[in-house]
Length: 219
Length: 197
Image (spheres, rainbow over the protein chains, first blue to last red):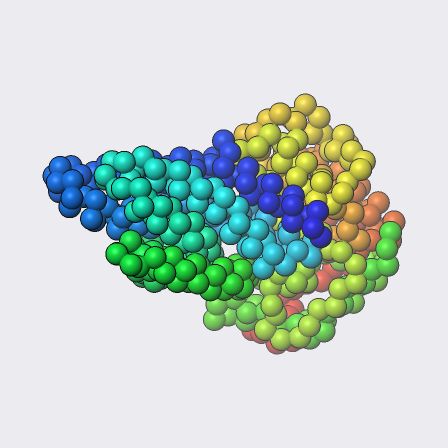
């Protein structure tokens, strides 16, 4: 069984990271950087203002970037019949979804944390703020990945599912945003722990909610 | 081949608001073959998906003993990968040791991305996946679609060999399928408009 899950993980990583049609890990990262770059243009070169609001902008950009890969997460495999073939081989959907959450995080979380370095330079964040932003992203991106996979499973097979998925993710990600961005306020470092707590809840729910959605979408 | 059995009791299946069939029972033992026949939309594919355990029936239950392989219109092969690598994923998954692909006429297509394959070639690739799975129960949904005459004969031979080896074959098709000793199930008899027979 472990051997099969490792095979699945390899396939998922190759699809989400690699040169496949579904690849394009770069796309959310570029989008993230683009938002971070646009913001100073929009509000003007007021360094104190940028430094004060920059952390929040990074969080909003991360949330929006999380929407981009949604339509590649579940829908293609549902259409190809991969979920059917896995079910026939006795692999539980929950396991498939858990593997996919992990693969999606690998393809999405660490690249975003790397991109947060140039983004915080663009926004003029100081060292301590950058540290909190990076810690917050480390705590929050697993939750965003879990949420993304769940919502992608819920909307797979629907007409206009991609747009609907985006709309669904935004309100559900609000707790992550509040705690994540809130941790940047003076004395708000405990927000990182709360972000991690929200992430853990989402991670615990995602495989089961996603598996139920896949099973009903398959009907 | 491991022991296998496929039985269904008092099945009913609903898609949307419509009950497709009801009161359907069947029992297949090792070596049996069954063709599910009927016009389009009568529920052949749904019956196969219910038998495979992929669709929950409205009523009744299915008993499966032995692994189940399914072929339908989707090949479950990653479209951007070369055929060899797409098949290799399932090969490793099913721990295939032999190379059963040669007889399927796929030689020379190994480095062609799956999305460039024709319908018939994709069907042959799906057959290769099924052969690698070594499942005693075969559920074939329109297995002849898109295949040329040689391909169709090949599928019939493979199915005959599978049944002779103690496997079970259920074939949903509106086309004639030549298989010795095969029973036919007219699904239309179980549609609620006609009343259960």
